Image (cartoon, rainbow, N blue to C red):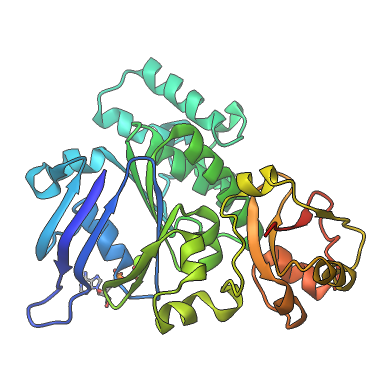
Length: 334
Ligand code: ADP
Ligand code: MG
């Protein structure tokens, strides 16, 4: 779906490249998260895909076609793009904002209305919201509309540059969940940028860690947590997230199928740890009521107040994990 071959971008001759010799391929339907410190070249990489920035060297192919061979306007229409400042148009209704691309594609009024109605269903907002104006929406709702706008023309590829970065943690968390679900339903290829490791672990099928314009490691979240490529990655992901021990399970489905032992949520964390030690379990995966993986935790590390996800963090602070009724703490099976 997307391939980078020796892609380099310099903003001035003789300057240090903003992106240096990038090689990567992304399959159809993959959710790939780019992560790295500020200034490492994430946004530049996104903008080279839809040609808001041209490459200095190398080649980017979308669906087998070199992007430089395409008309930039056509190309941008075929790639969804969501950024932090989505910029809904204030004097247009939500419906008009969602199907903005419809005017370019010469959709008639009926088609636009139909598409807006279809799309708003995807994000759990009532149809009546279509008539509202952007200022009548919360930040989280506006960002949902921004995502829908990128989906309107049904592009196979969507680029998202820190789309949830400006939202409060609770809204961000629920939008992440919603969006991950949505991505599975609509089966899009997503390239997502963040500087938040929790977000990357939660969303990505694959995580691409960048530093100073280069890819340092590209792999599944589990593989990166287990085998960080070097010290930079270790530092970046935080020692607290490293898996000290390695459960033989990698997906939530596998864990559920393996019939894990559930620990009662009315036990204190201390009691739970003792119980896990007795059972010689040395690491945990935290799964919420909807069977989504929320984080990893090493039993030995619990005592050291290691932080893995907000949920675990909260659990540790309160010295018990019965903080969310719908959450279960399950141990993994060796
Ligand atoms: P990120 O999104 O990872 O924070 P960027 O891709 O925005 O990083 O920037 C990568 C590097 O390129 C930075 O050093 C930045 O200053 C530089 N850069 C980005 N855009 C421009 C530009 N238009 N002109 C000159 N330098 C730029
Ligand atoms: Mg950026």
